[in-house]
Length: 270
Length: 270
Image 1 (cartoon, each protein chain N blue to C red):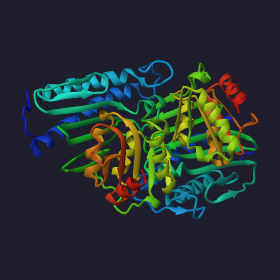
Image 2: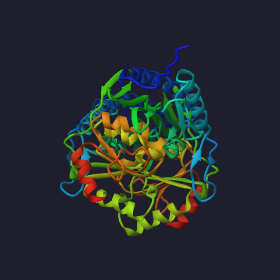
Image 3: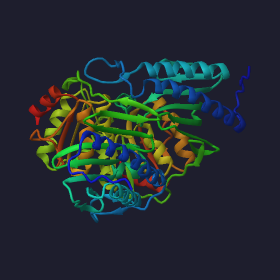
Image 4: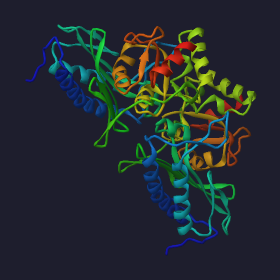
């Protein structure tokens, strides 16, 4: 069996891992599509009052990816939304969000995605987002950001000319902001942009990479919600940070912008 | 050439028209996909301060559909978003929204659709929504509501067991409400449901028909925004009305619900 046990990942190793991850995503997507647009049993992780649906699809996809990835990369750790962290023997982890955007998923909206990232310490080496209903696979690494769709490979690039007054801003929902201050910061930006829309989910970050929108501002993100998207945004020319301007490996409040000047305009407002 | 000039449309005639419309939608979708996920020139119909993008895709699709439909049905009138109303010699009109959800379109989100309705007086005989990026065609008439996708035909049915406290409610954006009263009415409903999400566009009405969500409440809709969706909702078992409980052929404030009891619960709140 083909195994990778290196502690130092060369760009060649990362390219191989990214290629393997793309194959694994196909299998994950097939599982997801068995449940998408079907009636679903929805559990509620948080109990009464809050609504965080977890579906069988989530659990099956994560189990599938854990098995595939640990067979090929037995030394890597795996951090997943559903089953938590399983440390590896080296400081390299796969980060899995089996269905990011579960609320979109159960509503039948194709803005959710399977997320997979490869992280070494605080460096995110590669990230993938797969939307199997549209068939779009988005991925990024030091080698660039790409969209693969129906056999076509598109090099993704953010809008380098985007400015605040012309920006298209997305956010999944205002209820995601942790407190009044963070919500007020979001609204100060929203008042300045040309167009603000909700309901983005992880698809919004990929549309930013593809040069369709210019800003995503969200809050209370978990690491697995955002880590796989960081290399996609950065390799496409975008800037993604937390409120302190650092790479948002811990999640929380996140600003993704199409370019550095736009990011600076936003940071001045929040 | 095959022409239909009847003033009285039998169910057979409607089935033929619906079949012809499905073919025409394919051509419309091909035009749309030439522009989707590409950099776009966006005009602004309303001038400064407001943002209502009109793309070349809109105009080309409407021109294409007008030509196709008027060749096959020369006596029917055509009402379209871009070119207005061209009366026919009989009281039957095609209603076209070439790209409903232009803001989603220019943002790269596949929640827009090409809308086409067949209206005789105040009766909506048939309606179609086509989302070419996902390949999903939704349509409805007295013969039923269907989703056609990758060669598969799905009979659509709304959730007959849905109630307010368990409902999933969609609305494109709160900025669409015409005044504080209408917004307050929407919020009273939003506070009662299990899950409320924004960013639905016309895809939300189709997800209601498919039994994925339960409510859509929107405002300031134009007739062409909603007329083609009415038969899809109704044939799937849903109820769609204006604030007075009438079929919303004039647009405006619209409530679409998965069943009559849920619709009554909402009407009592607004």
